[in-house]
Image (cartoon, rainbow, N blue to C red; front, side, top):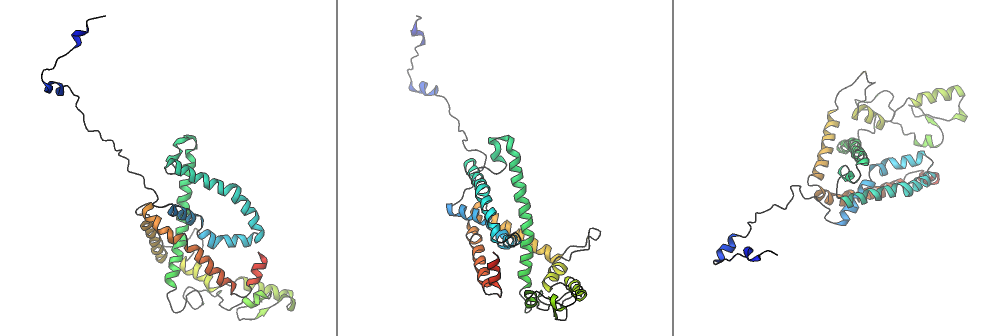
Amino acid sequence: MGDKSKYNIKFDDPADLEALEPECTDVDTESDTPKRQSWGKSIEFILSSLSYAVGLGNIWRFPYLCYRNGGGAFLIPYAVMLLTCGMPLMFFELSLGQFGREGPITVWKICPLFQGIGYAMFMISFFIGCYYNVILAWALYYIYSSFTHSLPWTSCNNSWNTPQCKDVDSADCSRSGGLMTLNGTCFFMNSSSIEEWELVKETVLGHKSPADEYFHEHVLDISDGFHDMGGFQLHVVVALAVAWLIVYLVLIKGVDSFGKVVYFTATFPYLILLVLLVKAATLPGYLDGIYFY
């Protein structure tokens, strides 16, 4: 063993000991990455998911698809696919986002092989947003146009109407299996000759309702084809800009502002469904629709 005394150091002045203390520098422990926002309340997250799941497609498109594909029978395969595919995929997506606290693209760092799924999810949301915002723009313009004494889509006396426009109420005639001509005469197949019935059928099929012409001839002003590109519909452009402005204002502060808006967007569709249900129950022939479903 060597002589350990040569490692002993004497300090006569305490200041000499302080001089040997290591200098500490301030270390910035905070990351440059901004803190990720989170939902203020659990109910806001639940309502936001509900408002995403229940939207225009449920109120406007789903009843039509259900009616076209067999009524109540369509609900059986729909419910099976919802329980076996829809709900598990939704639960997996929500769980993955909650666990990783990342967006749909960066969350797939856990498995880069599936990163394309994240890009696909982003593109789907992007195109759905563009698609539905156009419909919202139409709805905003209809709301604006409804502030008139006489609704412009209820008559054929407007500048955009064509000779094919027919504003005669043919509901009673149609429910009886007949066809109503432009002058209001109701023809039935069993009381007309084959030639007369075919002539009336061709004439009636060429007719358009005022609401149809208002949408296609005035709101959209659809051209004849790709060879005629047409021009911008200024009222639609303004309505679309307002729709995107609303989206921007809703998301301006992220989940903080969006979490407050979902209290309205998640409950309003159910109120509309209730109003439509009550209104439909007061219309003539509502029992036929119930029997069909």
